[in-house]
Image 1 (cartoon, protein in one colour):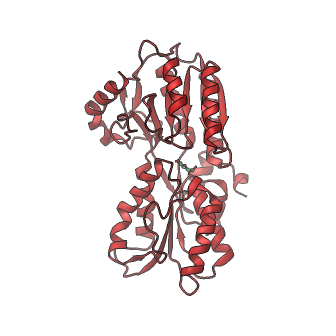
Image 2 (cartoon, rainbow, N blue to C red):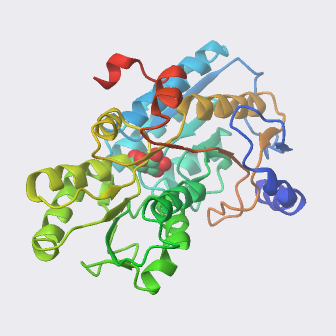
Image 3 (cartoon, rainbow, N blue to C red):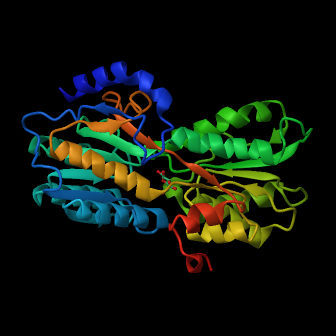
Amino acid sequence: MKNRVRKLAAIGLSAVMMLSLAACTSGENASSNSSGGSETKKETEAGTGKIGVAMPTKDLQRWNQDGENMKKQLEEAGYEVDLQYASDDVQTQVSQIENMISGGCDALVIAPIDGDSLGTPLKAAEEEGVSVISYDRLIKNSTAISYYATFDNYTVGQKQGEYIVEALDLKNAAGPFNFEIFTGSPDDNNVNFFFGGAMDVLQEYIDSGKLVVQSGQKTKEETATEGWSTEKAQSRMDAILASNYTDKDLDVVLCSNDSTALGVENSLMANYSGKWPIITGQDCDKPNVKNLVAGKQSMSIFKDTRGLAEQTVKMVDAIMSGKEAETNDNESYDNGTGVIPSYLCTPVVVTIDNYKEMLIDSGYYTESDLQ
Ligand code: BGC
């Protein structure tokens, strides 16, 4: 039933995709979609019931913000909330989700650690009629997922790539420029979009020889960072610097997010004395914004988790009242069981020129957060 609804939604609403860049909170151009709820789905009414929120880890700043925003906004909407963080341990997350279901949660919002590892608890969710929203990262190969709320992950990668093209003036400059790549965890579906979006912009410059990857590590697999670990990125950068950059400058590093960028920056600070490279990132984590202000990171992508939480609460309200939730992308995210109706929030490039406006004036951080 749910699959059929998803497929119809995907066909009927694909035209609306063109409008997917609508800001997260505007909703003006968004379409509606069926929640796929069946008779057996737990439904009460909007603002009533208990919602389980499963976040991957407290170690990375953004997930703390995601969790806090979700809890606050769900409580403001009237829900009871069971918020859990899983220390990036898959088995912990599985147990937490099982406990949420047995503890009477009416719906679940899950940011998976490993998109492929939640089959068993989600089967239980389906059996109990508990609806599931996949949050930020897509949960793969499960028919339990009603909706996906995330940022436009392809655009994140594309904007990182475009930043590099402009910063080095790749269209006009002769180059060559030395270039290295650090992407994220192989078990995170978002990596396909971050890496894919960036490479769709940058590949032509690698092919033409303007960007030279001295390490030779160019594929998604070769440039992956397991668990998005800062330490793993740092030690890979240590090795790359030692083998390739003792007598050369490194001009640019594509980092898919801020935790990998931080590892690269730490490594450069310890082991490198050449010209400081252009470095990309994503999340606007506090240490990275500090590095941006200090000239050690060139850009980050701001993903305002308040907007993502707002959109997710709207999905919860729709599910709980048996209505249709607003979506704006019904073709990009197939989780292996069909396209998941999605709402993509808009990511924004942050540099030294606009970080105050985007991060401080918007109330996301205070001045003292960044000191
Ligand atoms: C998120 C990024 C985050 C990364 C590491 C990704 O799935 O979309 O914002 O930096 O995970 O936690």
